[in-house]
Amino acid sequence: MTKLPPIPRLEIRNLVRRFDGQAVVDHVSLKVMPGQVTCLLGPSGCGKSTTLRMIAGVEMQDEGEIFVDGNLICDTVFRVPPERRHIGLMFQDFALFPHLSVAENVGFGLTGSKDEKRDRVEELLGKVGLRRFIDGYPHSLSGGEQQRVALARALAPRPRIMLMDEPFSGLDNRLRDDIRDQTLEILQAEDAAVLLVTHEPEEAMRMADEIALMRGGKIVQQGAPYNIYNAPKDRQAVAFFSDINVIRGTVRGALTETPFGQFLAPGVPDGQEVEIVIRPQHIKLDFDRGGRGPLPTARDGAAARGEVVRARFMGSESLVEIRMDHDGSILKATVPNVFLPGPGKPLWLMLRRDRCFVFPVRG
Image (tube, rainbow, N blue to C red; front, side, top):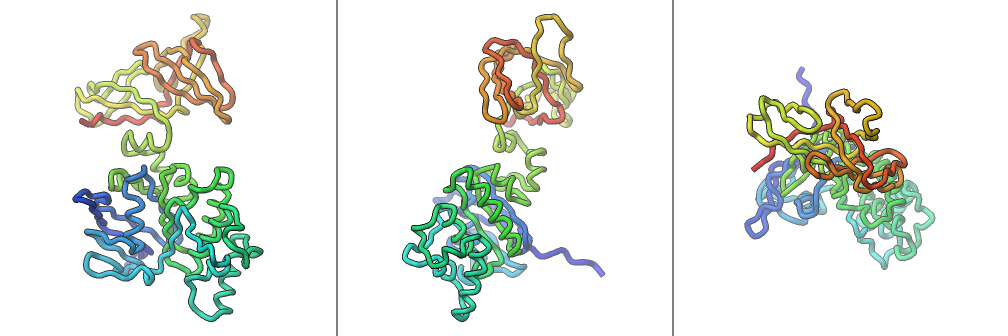
């Protein structure tokens, strides 16, 4: 007997939303399984939040379909109202009711007897560590405590799907990591499918089982965080996760000549210009000893010389900017711990070939 594939908790097919004739969400398709955290990652204005609002039912799509557990909940004709979609919502501003107690905020959308609702409220406030504030009011809570109350309220009706729109951006950096980790643990225990919107790559890498990278209203790449980071589709995808260095060259016989040696460019036609992209942490540095030692060699390429422009200590690493001898361009390298050579200091640079990305220059 053929085993049927599992049914996604949430599936969207070819969602389109236009404003003034311009598609801000352009044929977006996505599946999220029960217990899975998927992140819509991209810059402001790329269509992430609009996609979330269509799934929640607060905005209508111009094209496309939305399914929950394999059942159609919305297309351009049929529409299940938002309150019947079994979808929880969390936003950046928490949106707590100031005139209601913490217990009343968490229990706001619950049905059932008074005792049943109180039990569910106490259960969730216990999970987020706030049971002692059950009869308090939002104004007496810190930002992190308000965020946890908002999480408890969103989870109270046991939603099948949780939509989260930049929910941690209002928290300070030290608190944010703890709240993220606690939120993730609670969501996984509830077995909800989670769709998280953020513009912060670090947040997506920390929380997501799968990342959907958005740009210009489209999903341009989708996969596990490791794959998105280590096998980016294009230069913009690399740059979204970290600083980059770019070296240009022209292909001849599937090879590109650079001051760092030849790079393979399979499948790229002769005469095509390419960009070799490398992150600063993958540049290796060595001192120029003024001819009193062998020229540094890299296992997979040549070394190129430059002089330090500036070096700054960044806490866990040092950032060194080097002006290259061959063309005057500036390359950046990061080095663990303290490494602060003075301006004008000659250095040899070597690239880790296994960490370089080669992309044809478009248009």
